[in-house]
Length: 213
Image (cartoon, rainbow, N blue to C red; front, top):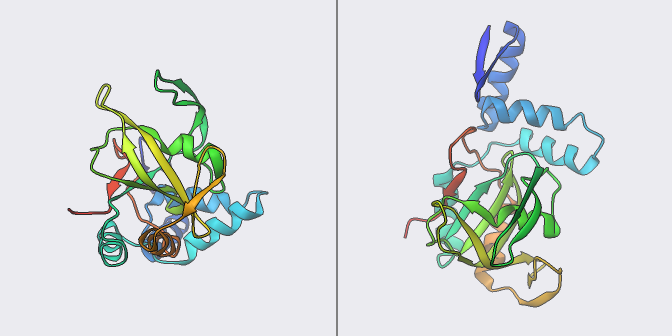
C-alpha cells in the first residue's frame, strides 16, 4: 500500500498503514508529522522524547479552536503561529543586523537559537504582533511586542520582540528580564502551552494567523 507524504511516496504494509491512520485520527496530525514524532520517541534526548510522546497522546487543536481560545484570553494579541521545519544550517545576515547560522528547530530548541529561527524570513502580513513557535505541532515559545521589517521579495523578519517566560518579558537575545509580562501575555502563554497544534505539512508558507481582527 502506498501513501503520499510531502513530495515523496513510501510503501508500507496494511498493518503499518492502519497504525498510521489510527494515530493520525487520534491526534489530528498529518501522516508525515506522526512518522516524525514516532521517530523522535526513539531518540536519546529525553526531553525531546517526552515532548513527542505528549504530542502523540493528545488531540491537537485546530487553528480555529486556537483562534477562539486566544480571542477569549488575549484579545489584544494578534498571534501568528509559525511551523518550523527541522533545524538546519541557514547562514543569513541583513543590513538591519539580523544574523543567524541556522533556521528551523528541534523539539527542544530554545533560547537565542529559537528566536533567530522564528524571526524570519516569512511571507507574512505585518498585522501580527506576536509569534507562537511550533515544531511538529509541539509548542516551543511565545514572543510578543513583534514589529516587522519591510518586505524584501515578499518576505519579512521580526525587528523587535520579547519572549514571554515565567511571568516576565525576556530579551530573547540575552535572556535578561525586561519587565513583568502583561496579564494577557501570561494567559496566552498558559493557553498555548496547554495545546498542540495541527498544521498541514508541506504548505508553501507555514504561517497560521490565530486571530481574525
